[in-house]
Image: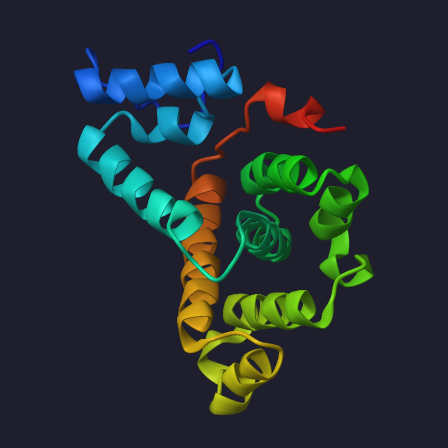
Length: 188
């Protein structure tokens, strides 16, 4: 690790368990870096494992939401929360998955200026409502998602992704988590 992932003095466990080291090696091979969020959690392997298990479930498990749609939610939520880490990392993912650098930038700044279909708009409106006023969500909000084709399982997944990034944004902001420099140039 060359850059310090947070403002906290929490060094990675040393040595890392073999399976964690293998996971980090795969990240290095596939991404060209070990995401700082993983390095930040690595001071406590149990916390790292819990974080990665939830991330993998929310972002990678079978879903009616595409990987791009889940990344779009991550960016929209992170934009509202002004989370530097997640905007940088997940903005790069949107650029890469969509093949459209402008889309990534639009979602970072204001998802409403992006050329989205009715399904995507409804999805991001719901994620935004969860972020700014979750206690005001009513059946009519879930019905608006159903009307554009989301199943109840999809609604759960939208809520799970938005909830995960609201939590992650707060931890990243509270610890001054910094994105890897490599994210800034990806898919531009």
